Length: 410
Image 1: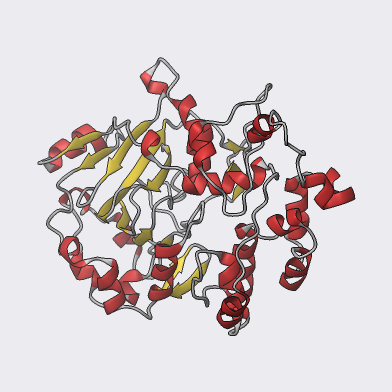
Image 2: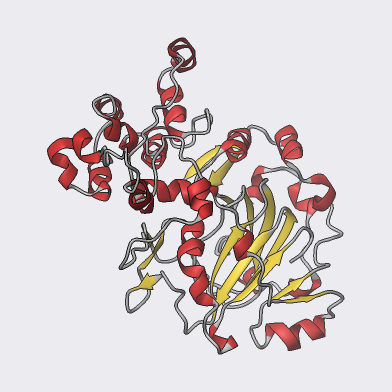
């Protein structure tokens, strides 16, 4: 099996269908737990920040650490505001301070953020409010003002919108606060995907006969994009954000760890600036969305259904509806059911990157039996920090397979 990752490429919601082929049925979809770790790439010498990074303006004025060395050459530079703002606790790294803040209740975070400029910035880290929103309210919330903090506050206090208008407060801007740890989530959410989608070395085929597919791809275990695989599906002309909202607005769907209504998910997907957006991945869509299965068709290549031999009660999960905005997707993994899945794109497009089974992707670490996996926090963090190294090996067998599956393709 290949180590593989997927990434939604287009800046709109992508609709996909995923199903396994008929290989090696198992009873669980659960894979090994994945630990997320923030990878800040350090250099032996200070690095001058790229022009692209310099052009990105963090909403709170936070700058990457490399900018400190440039600003320090200016005659009127007074130094970083971090130590004066934090006092004794400035000895702690931003990473440690955020770990401590994660332990505090929401009201304490709000109070603490009013005590100093740097604590204001630290307590506005949106990932912290994302965790609180999901912990407190599960999927029962409506996305607000492009941020998890606003979403949490609005859900906690119905007066939030009125108070926000009356106070008319603009976000505080910090002029001399430098933090790679706080800047990187913003950077990963803001950068474009263009540098990472130029390589396409997965075969693209049309008009494949069943015999050709088996001999050239299934038996050797070789990935392929079938460009005419789903072009004729009714879903191609029916499925859209508007259609789903009109047909199943209040239907509960699974988005990672929470269940939420279709309309709430799309409101989030259309407004989020998350580095790693919530990914709708629902295994019960066929039962929840009446008539939706009439819009898709199992291609001729995958009609041998060995799961059917297990009986209805023992059959494992075998089909999923996947929806996500740009930057959403799955991190590197081997299929936990040990199957070879097929994945059809209805709208949008999906980037695939796959490594041979014996090669662990750079930046991804496992224990000896692969029961635990540690990987970067987001796909864009992995691409920005590690993708370039995957293009270095001279042997093509050691480089990943890459491709973009577009609308109507499998």
